[in-house]
Structures are given as C-alpha cells and as structure tokens.
Image (cartoon, rainbow, N blue to C red; front, side, top):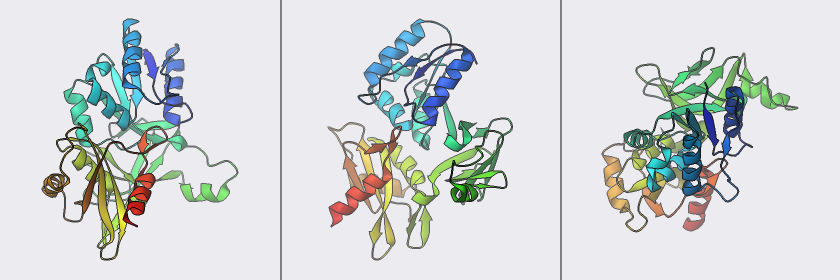
Length: 296
C-alpha cells in the first residue's frame, strides 16, 4: 500500500530488494540506512525520525538481531512505524512478545530468494500461495511452498533444480508446524536439527525459550560431538546487560522447567556477542566451530 520505507537491510539479499520493490510500487524513493559500518541503532533512530517527520504511513523491515538491538537500546526508535516486518530468520516468540509489549507493530515474514521474498505473513500465506508441512502439530516437518511466486529453478544447475523443485512444490529445507488454528510456525533449518540420544531437537525451539529468560538478549543452540549422546545440546547466550551476565546454572534450571529433557542444554556459555552472517542471522556454523576448537 501507499507509504514510505526505511531500507535497513543490504540489497544483495532478497529482503532488501523487496523493500526497494515495495517503495517503487508505492511511487516513492525509500530512505536508505548506511550499513557500510554495520547496523547502528542510533543511525536507524535518526533516519526513522526523518522519515516520520515527512508525514504519511511508514514502514521498515528488519532481521531479529536488529530488532533485539533496537529494543535493548531505545524501543522508541521503532515508534510510529505502521508496520515493522521481521524475517530472515525465525523470530523467537519472546522477542515478538517483547516488541509488541513495547508498542511495536511487528509482522513476521517468511520466504526466500526462490519465492521472491516473503510470501507468508504472521503465519498466513498470501493469496495464491500454498503451504505444506510434512509433520504434525506436535512433530515438526519440512516446509514446502507452491504458487505463482516460485522461481522456475536454478540457472545452469539442472540437478539442484530437480531436487528443490518437485511437481510445482519448492522443498525449503526448513522445519515447521501448524498450530491449532492452522498458522505456520517456522522452527529453523532442517539441517540444523540436533540428534541427541536418538532424539531430534530443533535448535530454534530451545533458542526461543532461552531468549525468554531474564537477562538473555539472544541465544544460539548447536550440537557438539559427544561420545555418549552422539551430539550434546549446547547453547551460547548474549546477556541483556553485559555487566550483569546471567548465571549458566540458573539458566539451565529455568530452561529445564520449560523444555523436555532432551532439549535442555547440557552446557550454556555466556558471550558478549554472537558471530553473524548475511543479513544478521546468527552464524550457527561459526558458533559450533568456536566451541569445538575450545574443547580440543
């Protein structure tokens, strides 16, 4: 719809391209945040203020770690946006609750380059988009997407195309489930699943619980090699207040009241920051590599 956009995502990723497309369709130029030095909440706040001062409806799109940093520093920087789209990675439930409690009009988005960006909003697909989950309400399964927004395949990669695009359905490699109302819940990448003691653990579910605990701003969960369990669930958390980091034992105890036995991290490590990749997604591979190197 009509309105002005603040571009706070790099345009080499489809989420940033979508902001440009939305602005063009609205008939105006977006305000552009300089990201060459990384995402800076203060610069975002100044750009948001200028955008709102121009009048009319205004929007922006963020990844979860950007939303966390804005909420941690000054939630008022998000005030006045008619919608704040959040995608690029599964957003923890507690993060969304926290944002909405601060008055932020958050809308979750789900999509990827192969779907020309977001095609599922707040768990509901756009008109013409079909979603299929090969699982149950209790057991997550792989997510498949179909509809007119799909790419036809990968350039000069027929074998990769044949695997990913089957009978009009795109195999996303993401895990999800539908809730009791039929709303899609995205739980993370299927290849991130941790197999511990013969049981499957989706890291995103554990991260969502940890991120909701007092003193935790963000979390990244990985599986580390273990002679007894095959993989042991291990978490890295970022403190809301670096000067008063949470105690790992207390976090494990609190998580144990909210998670199944297999999901509870065997170890929780408190760090000052998470390694990131792309548009601000936690770099799970880098976290795992760092922890494996530490254990040698």
